[in-house]
Image 1 (spheres, helix red, strand yellow):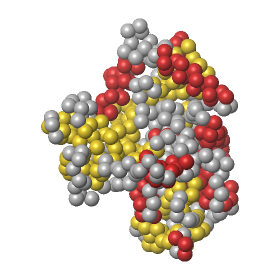
Image 2: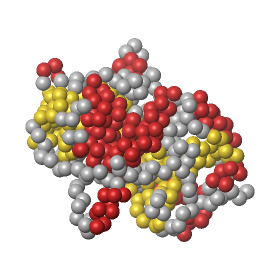
Image 3: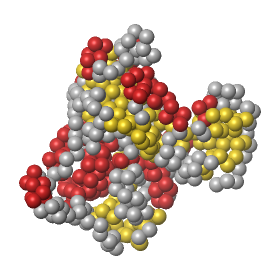
Image 4: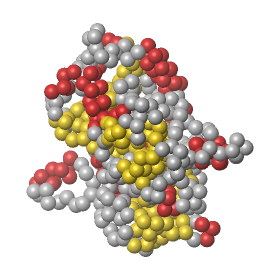
Amino acid sequence: MMQLKCPWCGSRDESEFVCGGTTHLIRPDLTANDATWGEYLFFRDNPKGVHLERWRHAYGCGQWFNVARHTLTHEVLSVYAMTDPPPAHS
Amino acid sequence: MKYSALALLRGALSAHRNWVPAWRSPEPKPAYDVVIVGGGGHGLAAAYYLAKNHGVHNVALLERGWIGGGNTGRNTTIVRSNYLFPESARLYDFALKCYEGLSRELNFNIMLSQRGIVLLAHSRHDLDSMARWANAMRMNGIDAQILTREEVAARAPLLDMSPDARFPVLGGFTQRRAGTARHDAVAWGYARAADALGVDIIQNCEVTGFLTGAGGRVVGVETSRGRIRAERIGIAAAGHSSVLAKLAGFRLPVVSYALQAMVTEPLKPALDTVVTSPGTGAYVSQSDKGEIVIGASLDLFPSYAQRGSFAVLQGVIAATLALFPSFSRLRLLRQWAGIVDVVHDSSPIIGPTPIPGLYINCGWGTGGFKAIPAGGWTLAHVLATGRNHELAEPFQLERFITGRLIDEAAAAGIAH
């Protein structure tokens, strides 16, 4: 089974985690038009390669954290805090 | 060459040396009227309907690997049209009706078996939502029948109906016209028929870029086998749609996930219908070869890996064995995953892209196989005429801007 390294609890089985999808998405201003909101809500890079995503240790400490993971090999390149800037993997 | 009992007899008398390949393997020409990227069911069907319905014969279908080697060869072969909303009902039932006549039309046995699908209700809430679902289908003119607990037991006698069952079955509903079709045969049948109408099926040909001309219009593709020019281009690449969109310079509301399935060793006929348990995420049928075919829910993290994780595998097997305890002694023969293109409302996208001359068929997510004839038909229509087919009109990219989503997450039948 795939394992992820929770920054607080260490390596745990994939089944303890929930993936929250792409991270570093910036919510647009409330006055933004429909196209901007549509882009924010639905449109994604969906890369075949390094993907910066958020995970939650749902069945553990409950904390969110960021992961840089390759979507073809599933290799985890780095785990970093929610407020950290994007790493230079991609 | 037409396939028939007589052709088979003639083959038998000539030691079967009379057979010819079902389609050619031509070298790509420098230019075509239409290029279709992606040699799965949807791409092959689009190529066939371009030639048959619209008289556009100068068509190339480019496939990175081999035709039918992606999701068309990785699904659980289930066909059905039990969707909730009128737009979806029309689209998926059009596909099912095409499937009903497809073996004859293509002169290729797709082994359609309308053995019906039974959806299981495990709770009072399931009973209520399935009553709503079945009634919505009937309002849309699709066959649906609510089943009592006893009727479910009669249709699938191996189900655990005991009082202490882990997932008690309280009832369910059925679409009798649903069933299974041989997935490879659908790809091969369309390929052979398209080839006979002049379509060039070019395998081992990866698209590596798009050529654009005046006004940003696509005028061709760069491929691993050279540059190919085209008036119009259609993409039918399922889980790899975003990769192609990126090459063309736009984004899609798609996330790619792995969807797993597996088969057991073959056994004697034991299950003569498709059984789906939306509550547990398992769907089970028996192939004509006798294997028990089990489908899983999505591995819920983005992936292009075409292999599933053990966590999901374990979950679906546990659910299947809770429903069918007697399957516990079967051994799994194969397990695999396809990369599916999931959009937020679990409905497809069939129509123009932001790039002039470039059209797309994607977003089928976990349920593209059942829709192959409709996806191909409507993509061919927009490629040939430049106008959306009326069935595809509600399924445009703009709905993710306007907010007019068609949320079929429940009817998709697979946990998202």
